[in-house]
Image 1 (tube, one colour):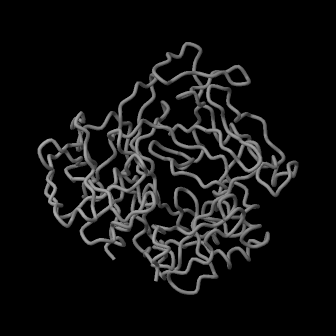
Image 2 (cartoon, one colour; image 1 turned 120 degrees about the vertical axis):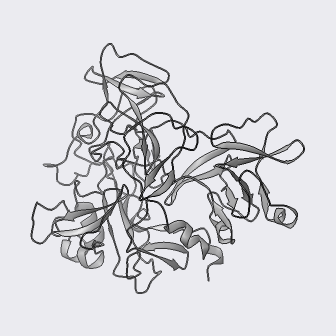
Image 3 (spheres, helix red, strand yellow; image 1 turned 90 degrees about the vertical axis):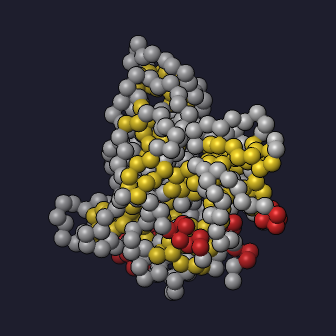
Length: 457
């Protein structure tokens, strides 16, 4: 299938330093290959702040140290809501929470949280971005007083934080702009400038990158048989593909041009590629059109490539990322039900939740049921995929030179796993394993696409 190549052969990003607005058609070099990066609409920034062009989340705002900025938008849970309210003081404080809230049924509030002797406060995990008394406010950048009287930077009314999981400029391990499931925790999201796309377009975050969609959310496609800034899709081609027309008042700018299909009728083109929607698409953010030879989804930016030894397998509901033996790759998701909604899905957090889900509290059983994906000797990662040493007994980072440490693959700073219940390539029997379909505490298969469930063989 053509799509299999389109999704897996992504381009590895190099490190990116502090950024200024991207000029039209600018790119960076990655392993000798030119990789386009997403353009954005410049905005005013406080002194010392910058825009970082990240490999995982496109352009994001960063503090004077280059660390990505996040916000904690209010999110409705099953029995209430948590997060920060716009134009109000931060709900992420220095107080260590000790019990769950009961906002995610069926667990009533008041249960003591695990490992309280090691549990950090919200502000330790999400340091507030503090402002001085004489900080100059610009544009949507304001300050909000914290409970202790200090001032915290806010953007568009939401208090801002950095993440202890980010170590260098360009890291975005604290959260994602990808839309969360209804059963997910009240997660933090990176903050950044708007993508520089015309009003009739938007950018959707999917596992394979930053996907270009129209204002309704339907995928945008390009055709290999078109010429640069010239559409060759005519006659019967138009039965299946609808050109994305530009309003009469639209103006070409930067990476966006307008091609004349007929007198007075213009078609949008992005990076020289005339743009279309697919008549057969029935769902948002679809990849169905990429199954047609010569047609491809359009991205503003692709995700870094998975490890070279990984494969793609076709299961009964889609294409899934797999290890060298064809075993489906799973990510682990965990957020506790405390008032600060701290993540518990990375090696620096408590492993009590994962051990309960994967082995009824037994680490050895977890290793058998949900084994880590081991990295080969000398394996090299990128911004998305890294190798980390894990203590197999605790699930935490291994000590330096620890004899029984496991070198495992991690996606966005979190180890990935396979499932003992999968018997053949393409099996994904562990998908949605855990609480609330795996979105609150559990395992999710690394689907590259699952949009052809109804016509799978």
